[in-house]
Length: 111
Image 1 (spheres, helix red, strand yellow):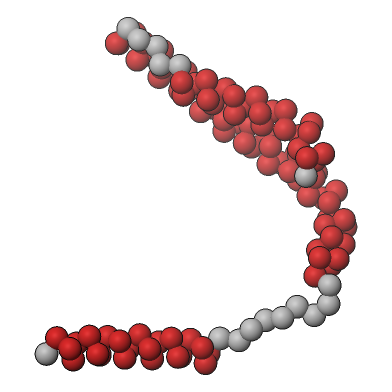
Image 2 (cartoon, rainbow, N blue to C red; image 1 turned 180 degrees about the horizontal axis):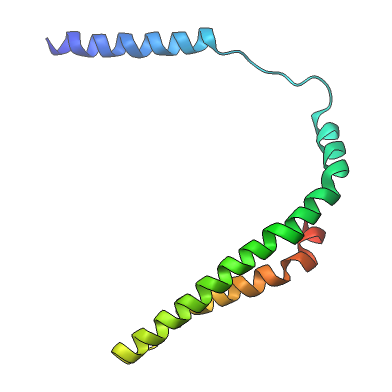
């Protein structure tokens, strides 16, 4: 009885694998892919830089600043309640905020 169950499961697995082999199709690139990617990046580079510098980084900075001040406030209220100031989370958020504020100055030379 148990052998029949395992045999059915094994048969289903083999059938699924065989179906996957029959259905799937390999995709091959025609030509030099790296040159096409580099060419596309060169044409879109200035637009990507402008969007990232003027939209993405300011949004991240705003979110981190709000989180930093909220966490600083909650850490202060915890200090008043328990007498111990927990500075780890505000320090990490402050470091991330400084990193993202200065990132547009050097991130493009790194990439």
